[in-house]
Structure formats: structure tokens, C-alpha cells
Image (tube, rainbow, N blue to C red; front, side):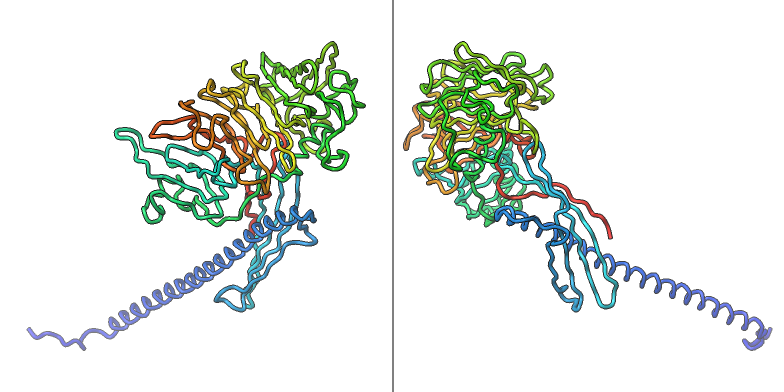
Length: 560
């Protein structure tokens, strides 16, 4: 049978096939056009997103710049950036000329909390501007807080002790709060882990900042790869060549005296830094008592802290707690007799209530005040200086060596003059603990002197101290301003181990005072443990000075 030729098929079938092919091509073209449109949209969206992110980054840069400006303005006692006079900056966008990026930021609000810390609300607008694209803006707000010096678990200007001997950070030590050192830090991090036994923790469990390169043993951890044994956050948590920090200025110390004497930090003492010319004794509402001490005044309300004039000899404070009453017995060669101060908190003091009464007895005279020397109220509050206990004395003994523990209840700072030409010393005779030791919820203590000394001698072992400790002032020599053990001399710290010294709080000192040493593998004196009181980062003891730095604690993106 003869096959038909291709041309024998009807022409109508060939037409249908052509129409189908054209239809498919049209569908493909439609899809391709849609895809090109979508691609253009995606590319434009990506570009707009990148531009928006640049504006957001500029807004954040405005926050950081304003933080620096606030710190400068406070140091120079100048006004802060406001909406009429904001912090501004404009810079070209790299590789995208003529595009420019800019920010404008200002302090929208400032306030002081009952903790005594200052807070600032910063509003910042970042802007990306291009001749082709429309201007893109992003706004953010941030809350920054003044940094209390108690925010550091350990703070020191010098890495030598009072005898000029170098001090090392050892792998047997652990700091669970931030550390600052003026340097050079000496860090021996390579002590091997016990075998068998748990893995040794890093020395630093938070952040470290120092302006000087450390001395490492056995070598730079960047080469040894041993950062994990130095600090838990790795090399990024260890900041070198950062701005040097300073110990509290004399004005901060004088402010505590002013709060104790007159209930505010204005320091209206005669001569500016002179202290009241009053008879030795214990004063509450001293500025308005007409020269009468706390046992003989008629003032009804405690509107200040406690001011103690013991200039003619050391003062000794023995404090005990029974129920909700703290009793301080204060003696000194400066006077004959004993001041008995009973601080009576309400039954719910555990909730942080500092109300109640304070009675002071001296000889046959007794007077009771409404209110207690506890806490730090905000500005404008009548008893804003209540938590300040200032002793005009060259030496203060906490405990008498015969009472096993000195116990405190409430929230206050015990301070003495700590600036040139004054020298002062607080002697800790035994354990110094909070009454609410199990919870540490509301009791807080600050100690502030030129030197804080463990003065109980060889009979004191395994001491526990609950406090934020400050020793030293700016510009002091490198052999002074320390927290130290009275048994430690230039080449020895006694003859036997005193166990562990645990400080629950923070330790700020000019030089790192000697409390113990390791001799031939044996501990002599105390092995020191600094356990940072986490509350102090945002709620330190009353009138705790600040470092002058500000910390961003909250950040909000307000959008475009």
C-alpha cells in the first residue's frame, strides 16, 4: 500500500498546531513578564530594606554619640542635648555618592530613681538621603543609666599590693561580675584541672576591661588558644585599651557627710569641705539640732542620716539584730559613755520598708525619732539622706573583737573621709553579715574609707563580709587605698591558713591589698572569693558613687 506524503495531511491541522505553539509562547511571555516584574519588586524591596537598615544604624549611632555627649556635659557641668540643640552628624555614604547618612538625637527626659542612679531617655532619628530615592528615616529610643561603681565585682587602679609586690589573677579564683583593672594585669590561667574532677571554670565569668595589655602566664591566649580558661565570653569579653576609669571623686565622699549631717548632698559645711564644729558625739538632724546630739535634741523626725564626730580617737560600732530591731552601740575615747542607737523597723521590714522609729540613748538622756537611717529616697523627699552614716574619725572599728558577728539590717553606707589630706581606716573585726543572710533581698551595706582592714588577727577564720567596699581616692599613691589583712606584711601573711574570705558584694580599691599568699603550695592567710552581689548593678547601697560612664539598658525601634 502506498503511504501518503506529508503534504497530504489537511492544512487545517497544521494551522491548529501553529495556534497552539503561539499560545504557549504567549503564556511563557506572560510568566516571564510577571517574573521580571516580581524580580524588579524584590530588588527594589531589598534595596529599600538596605537603605532602611542604614538609617536604623545611623539612629543607633546617634544614641551612642549622645551617651558620650552626656558624659562630657556632666563632667563639665553643662546643659544636656535637648530638642532645640540636638546632637547631629552627617557623613557621605561610602561608595554611594551623592547619598548621605545623618542622625539627630537629644535627651527627651531625665530622672533619678530611689537607688540614686540617674536615667536618661534618648530619642534619635537616623536618615538616609539619595537624589533618586526618597528620604528614608528611622527613629529609636533608648534608656541609659549611670553606672554605679558597685557594678564591678573587682575594681583596682594598680596591680600591686600596699608593699609594691605584684598581684596575680589565678585559675583558682573566680569573678562572677565585671572586672576593671588599671593594669597591667598579671593573669596565670593555665593551672591544670584536677584529674579526675570537674573542669576548672574560667577566672572571669563576666566582662573585663583594662587600658593596658596584660602579662599572661604561660603566654598570650590568642596564641595558646586558651581563652576559655581565661574568660567565659572568650576574647570578645576581654577589652584592652579601653578608656581608663577613675575612683570616686572627693565631692562624692563629702556628699555622704552632707547627707548624714543635713539630709542632702548640697554640702553647706563651713568652708566648703570643712566639717561641722560640734562637740564629739552622735547626731541626727545635726544641722537643725542647735548643737545638741541625737540623745538630747527635740527634733521629732529623722530627716538625715547619722553623723558621728569622733575626731579625738577611734570609734567602735557593735551592731546586733534581734527580730526587727537593730541595735548599734557606739563608743569612742572622744566621749565618756556609750551611745545606744535602736533602729526599730516595722514587722514587714523584709519587704524593704525603711519606716519605723530610731531611738538614741546616751547616759540618762533618750530621744526617739520617727523614721530610720535606711535607704536612699529620690530628690525632694524629706529624709533623702537617711541611709548615710558618716564618721568624722581617722579609724572606725566594726565589732569589738569579742562579739562573733556584726549584723546589719536595712540599707545604708558607712563612710569616713577618703581624700587628701585626710586618711581613714575601717577595721572589720569579724564576720560582717546581713540579718537576712539567706535571701539578701533588701539589706545592703556600703563601706567607704581610705583603707578597709581585716583587723581581727589570727583568730579570725573563714570570714564572710556582705558589703560594697570602696578604698582609695583619685591620684592616691600606689601603696595606699586597699582592702587588706592586718597580718600581711611585705614578705608574709602570718604562719597559717585562715581559710576563705568571702566578699558578697563588690570590691573597689586603689591598689590590690594583700589578704593572703601561697607559700610552697600552701595557703597562708586568706584565700579570697569575690562573689558579686547582682543587685548592685542597678540597686547599689545608698549614695554609691558612679563611674561617670553610662550604660544602655533598654532600646526601642520606633519604625520609619
